[in-house]
Length: 88
Image (tube, rainbow, N blue to C red; front, top):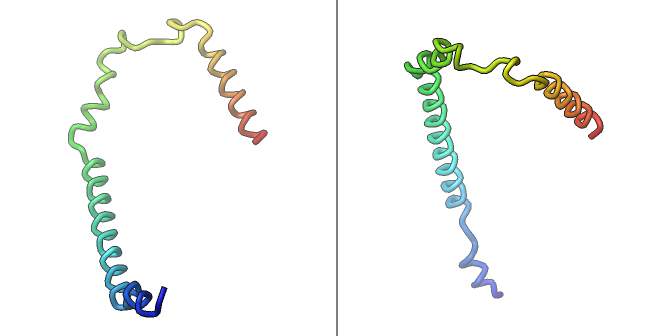
């Protein structure tokens, strides 16, 4: 590769700085859009209605009596999981 080839490939510092500034501005725009979308989601007017859906129908919800032995089994699984994480 010759000096002339290198000169063609070299990017002036002003161009690099402009590209970095453009990427930074784009990142700010996307971050702002994401934060605004999250705010809109947090203020969802139907969220409270959705949360109330299972409440009016307790007869449709399962209980521990529907799954005998499940409470003991899930406790055992949680203990095994905790023990496995402690040995890592």
